[in-house]
Structure formats: C-alpha cells, structure tokens
Image (cartoon, rainbow, N blue to C red; front, side, top):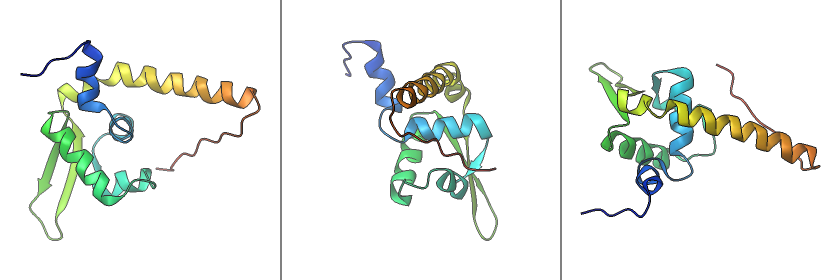
Length: 118
C-alpha cells in the first residue's frame, strides 16, 4: 500500500524528475511525436534516459506508445486522455517559468531561452 503525506507527492511520483514534465510539455505543444523528434527537442537528454522516462510515463498511463508495423520500425508517442488532464497545470508551470526568466534577467542574471524550430 502506498502512503502519501500530501497529494502533490502522488503527482510527483508520476511526473517528478528533470525530464518528464519537459517530455509532456513537448507532447502538449506539438501533439504526437517520434522518439527522434523528442530527442531533437531535448538535446541534453541521453537516449537511455529518454527511453526510460517514456517507458515510465507509458506505464503510468500518461502517454501511449504507438508502434507501426513497417520497416524501418516507426514508433510514436502521444498523450492519453489522462495525460491531457495535466495540460492546465503544465501550462501554468510554463507561464511561471517565463516569469522567472524575466525576473532573473531583470536582476542582471544572464539567462537565455532556446527554442527548437519545428
């Protein structure tokens, strides 16, 4: 039996860590993506870590892995309805991140925000 002290612990069990929220935000913003597309959008993640995070999100029912029977193999990832229910919370987190970047810059910190072209 799992025991949580507060509900956010249950949420962090599913989406906690450095990369899961980033993966989810890319899927929210861009829809269904192949593994290689996710890797291109997240150049600092290793292939091993990306695969591990995708498997955990799939196991928790947040995303769906779609395998096409073709050569070479094609695999895509998309959010489930359950995963899409995170959309409002993640949008708020992104908005807060933008505000944090602006605050940091206004305080003289050197901060840049990279974006990958579609």
